[in-house]
Length: 219
Image (cartoon, rainbow, N blue to C red; front, side, top):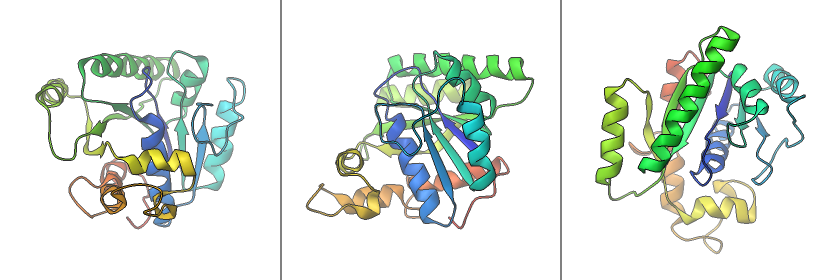
């Protein structure tokens, strides 16, 4: 079954948030999902993988669930190399800053090197995170334009900066489990992560996943 790897050489880009939101949204719409957390500082589901076991962990999970979502700890490690070698799609989260864009380039180079090492095509796409729901900054627009000009694939969805997403890590569970006493503006956060709700709904990522030939549950 499809393995989706989230990878970024830079911390603080919303990587784990994106991974958790995608995993829980896929699961809530009928897909069985195993999340492998190779980043020990973040919310975990399976968190015991090492460089020596990550491939076996991914392959075992792929046999039993519709999706495997891997949240990597950085990219400068053998674990990142091994996980990417088993990826059907690598998602590279990035904020709309030039510093993050530099990190994206590093991540793409790593994907390319793994393609050569394992002699297989590894699809990847950029997902912009922690964006404003109201304003698209000129910096972000410039970065998007440069990526597009160079043929770098990007998700048509962005994960907005919302307190509700931080609350998932503070209180546990999913967006559906949170209530208004725990976070502000919860309806907007759910709207951003709900399939078909708006042009910015996170779960519309299923269109890109389906484009890669994945069997996506009813999204």
